[in-house]
Length: 376
Image 1 (cartoon, rainbow, N blue to C red):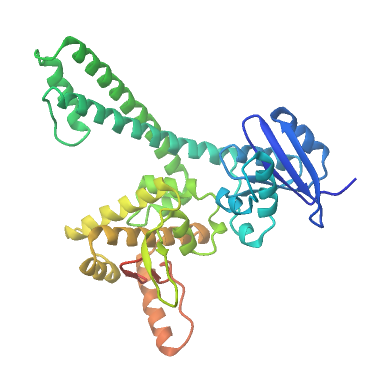
Image 2 (cartoon, rainbow, N blue to C red):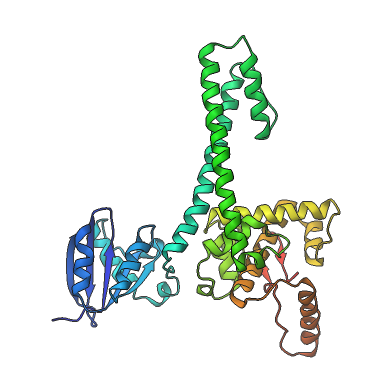
């Protein structure tokens, strides 16, 4: 029997397309399987390398195929697309996956396979995010319909309850409208209770996770961010550096440099939107405390706030926070601002003496478009 070197699998809801090659890159397998036949087929094969396009369902199949002794890798879809020869069908996609998984550039970007527990953790934060979006949508719906009857309220979720009370006692509104507003208000109250229950579970997860408690010691990271970082970044060692981690989150500048001229734009927004927004919100809150005089910023942040707008400074600070968090995640260390300051002083002395710099929890210098980011 011909030995299969690797197999690319294009998954779907019910039909799976397989494309396998041997050690000399000759095609030895082209097969279409129904969902219920996939594990039976792979159970009969000798252990080999199997590649799947990274998606939600791919993690389940990766876990099941690993139980059968196969080596499973998840390839990001954006790196598979370049290897699709012509047209778009399941057979071409499976062949592209098989080709992409063999390339060194793609191998450095394989997606870590999540365990069932990690998938459940991500479901927890995803459910919270979905409920919050629904609450915002519902509150905006109430405001919009109320404005059609000449009733408006100030910003804030806390104002919606007062608005609904005014609607209930307003005799000029049609009874149909008042009934519908009451139904919307009841759904909004139920959403608030569900979100509160989810956040209780999330805070319990935070208190029971040692890494989350260490991350929360960073001034710009709160309990939600301390939960999201280890949940979203399941394998921090997959990143070669803190800069790569920040780039995955989408906090690094777009690069349009050419002909020896460096031209950087805004942030790429290439990674996880929820994690990025939480880090930027934490940095914005910290900068607000600095501008109110409630905390003392680092010399780097103080200088940046003098030269750049607060929003740009918040993104730069979020980038730095991501790098610090990555260092804490891979090293097992705690955040010590005093030790970081000593490291900065030692690094300056080492540079003056021409020797190697001392290590620091703070990230290496990096340009962020409009402003130059240096170690804090």
